[in-house]
Amino acid sequence: MPPMSEEDLAWFKSTFRPIPRPQLPEDAIEYSLYLLSSDPAPATTDTVVQTRSRLQEVQKSASELIRDILKDYIWQRDPFNLEIAKDNDITYLRGRTNFGDSIEDEWVIVFLLRELTRKHKDLWVRVVDSDGEFLLIEAAGSLPAWLEPEVADYRVWINNGHLVIIQPKQDRKRVTEKISLDDFMRIAMHETGRLLRSPSIEEEAFYRLRNYPKQIEENLHCALVSIPRKVAYLVHKKSSYISPAVEAFYTRDPISLRTLRASSKQDLLFSPDDLVTVSVRFTRVGYAQLRSQDFPTPASWAQSLPPQMDGEAYTRAESGMKVSCGFEMLLSDPQNQDKPIVREMKLLLEDLDTGDERLPTTEEIKHSWSLQQDDEGWLDISFEDLDRELKGKASETQGSGAFGNSSAQENLQRIVARFEEFLKDDSANFDGVNLFDSDTDDEADEDGLSSEDEEDENLKFDKEEYMKLMRDMTGGNSGIDLRSQLKSARAKGRIEELDSSDDDSHEIEELTRQMEAELRPTGVLNHNRREAARNPTDARDKGKRRTEAEESDDESSLNINLAKNLLESFQSQAGMPGPASNILGMMGMRMPQDDRK
Image (cartoon, rainbow, N blue to C red):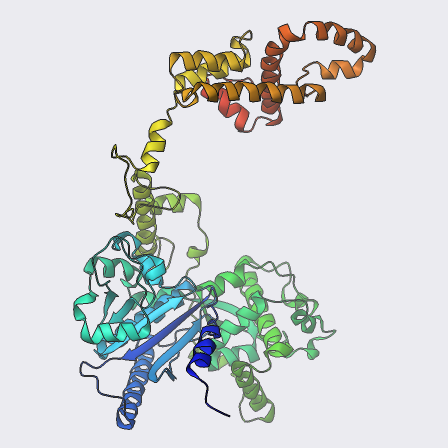
């Protein structure tokens, strides 16, 4: 094949469009880790091997951190993971974690990555989720004016335990420059003056990590449940098995529920014949999902949940039934057969069947296993509790894991404080607080006013005149119509926008006449149309008389029709707030309630 000419090559490049990278799911976080040396050497075989060796050291450090800090921690869905990857001749570490409904898992990962950068000083970490650079969202109140979401990609990094932001080349209020990964690497190694390390921004961005690693323990909950001995064996072997089981129960569908309709207990993998009460460790989100579900008891479990059970025993039995059904659906559903964790559990069950492993005895469970039961007060939140938290008056009787803990209290108070700042900010609008100043290149008019300022200057609203107009139209002065009121207001100079020119006023009056001429044949302007429908003969006679006097009383009928429509609108509210009552209330008119049956 002959080589392509320069023109053909240029045409081919112009038509080529790279495949867009798929967006992250809403419940996933993605992280990338790069090693940047202060003395970058040309890429050779030795440097590539050395880079991979250093990245393997980072992986080892991550495993040590997980073992030390996250001992017995349970992830809601996917765990933290790092793998070596190569992209555009750049070797780095990457990982993606689906955290489900547990937002705390996302911040646990951010904490791990920050600790990794403290151990490896030349490690630069970028974390994003479906919102993009979500660390900027946490620090929105402290960001510089130029840092908008459109130019934030590859500008936010974690290095040596600190948050680093890549600044633009020139100090401007509005920045359109976007940077790539190659740009970041060049700036980080050769233009260190553009690296912004702001303590105030960092404090806001890492605010959720202020109580870590101690707060990690509060993400878990231990509860006593009555479950089959086989389920207890699996959970004791590996506590993380509980998360996929709860997930299977929480996201169940008609296909996965088929296995629970077995005709006898012997057809189930986990028969409710041999139940034991053990302590199971859940994630808080998972336990809340389990308890909040209204799940009818399967026929095979009916005898295990008799109605005469007391409250505490019934709660343990019901929770155990839901856990067991989750394991049953997880291992029986065809769509789960290729999952590694399902294969692991099936191998353990096979070892029990072959006799390589044995089930724990009741004595072993009683004397060797933990029977921890945590307080469930955090599940019950009343309005009084929320109000007390917002005021910083948490109950002294609440435990550390209850709703009144210091972390929840600080988060609530911080949210309320920010909302109050937003309400007090006069520059706030529908787009939020005025964090970004207007473009300095906007041209002003000769009188010093911009186009928006000039528009606001021309629009003047006289509240007293508006109230007077509304009172007159609703019967306060039925002999004067809207056109005459507009003429009067224009003569007094109170509505200046309508007085821009005589031509405009004539156009408005002409338009009003045309609208009345079109609406009059339809009967909309006839306030006696209901009476006419009941008495057609009288209506014809009255119609003749009204035709003769149409010009004299047409204007007053408009006012009466408007008042009637207002009253009908008020009646249709049935005592509830609505537009009619709001308008009448602004005019000082308090309407009585319509008590007619």
